[in-house]
Length: 411
Picture 1 (cartoon, rainbow, N blue to C red):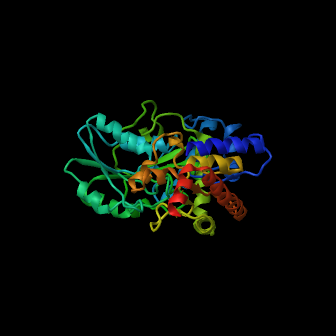
Picture 2 (cartoon, rainbow, N blue to C red; picture 1 turned 90 degrees about the vertical axis):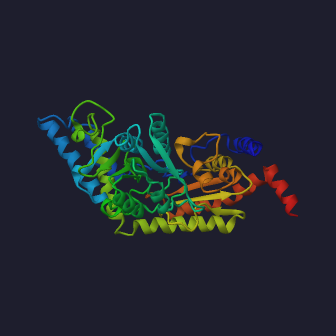
């Protein structure tokens, strides 16, 4: 497999002389990060310059930025159907997840999470275990879906927190968070859901979910990197991660990132509008056409998570007999950006923990590629991707000794 990747790089480099700056480039890795929308950029621009005040100051400059922060808080609250006072601005999804986990759990407590969580939750849980907490990781089925009854069966008298993601970052598979929220409510246990990959793609109603805490990240929904939110239900006592001033109602110390917060508020407004103006349906249609085009044109492929409800922008496809990493490099050299999964895990030697938890063999997990669309993607982008993927896969398989062996055995 690695031989094929190295050979392909050499061939591509000879043909193109490395990266061609003038070639067309299409971005389909929006689950890693999404480009800043022009409207969000324009909204934040004044707060990078003349409106520079500290939102905690009581003079004109501070009150000007304080008003902007509170308007953004209202916009995010509308996205989640909650009170503005329940919104805590953070530096991103990782901080929001950490604040939810470490803010609620102490040594001796029991936590229920899953085997497919983002590492912001998984590694937090691993740290909790070292601090004396007990963590139960519920499994998923072959589609990547958690059985709520497994969560119910995992409950203990000392269960303090359930943390189950809403949408998986690698497959886009949606979890039955409303059912899990009902179980948490019945058991009088706090419930946190990582909704980083759901925000802006699916309608989120924290009242229907019944969660006490919910995380989102700005740069996954076309706001800037370095912005995020933790929803904290009124009455939920949360230990802060940082100690300093009384910012965010004493839940998150530190001067607010006003430009980022303003842009996040604008992105939230655009996301709410998208649920009613057909934008989400447009992206789902593009995703489906891309997915079906690949399956029709390339044999020995399949959708990871097929049959499960998914966010409308994501598909994860396995291309048997090649390395997903090799395909990503080859497509990038031709102008198409995709990924094998979580950007924070790129370069890892082990196959995706999410795909392995779903029961995929390690070879198939390593042969999987994620395609994630965003608001700036077009039908022409899908056409471009479909023109590149089949011949690139064919070329990689030609170079693969594993595929050649497979053909011999098959004949």
